[in-house]
Image 1: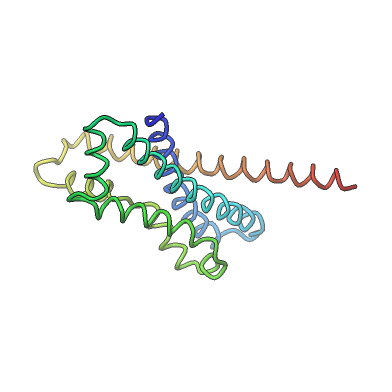
Image 2 (image 1 turned 45 degrees about the vertical axis):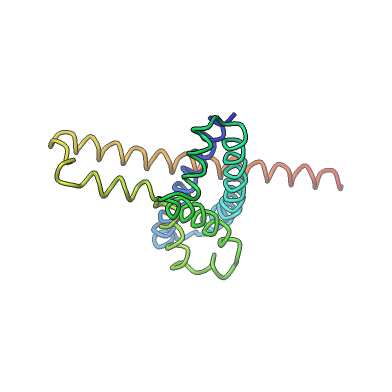
Length: 191
């Protein structure tokens, strides 16, 4: 159960990154596309989805922490307490706070309508503490890969980025179509 929750939390974090990428793509498309109604509709549905996913993330994280502490062995209990209140507690709480606050700020119309604030929120959702540590250590002189390996790394990062966007767009599209079907069904019952 704990492993399943950890997997779902990791998938939700990927959804946050997908939202950040899709919003940046939305800003770029908004400058070039003349018919903006479909983009605006997708963006509004995307805001609803990401704010819901942010609440699910927080709830699953609390459940995962409680399960690991209550039903884990002594090492897992120590790891949970050390992660929450140990030497690196700032990184854990900063990441949880940023993800939760950023996803809930999109509920406010003034923030949603400001492209600069939404761009900054999408950058917050794109970044993570692990990514910052990875980038700092991977570009250190002792960890530089060979010339051939750097290109495979770049291609992998591009493919992962495209995959994140596709999965997030698929999730938002599925939510939109299910929402439209429910509206049609609801209106059919009232007639």
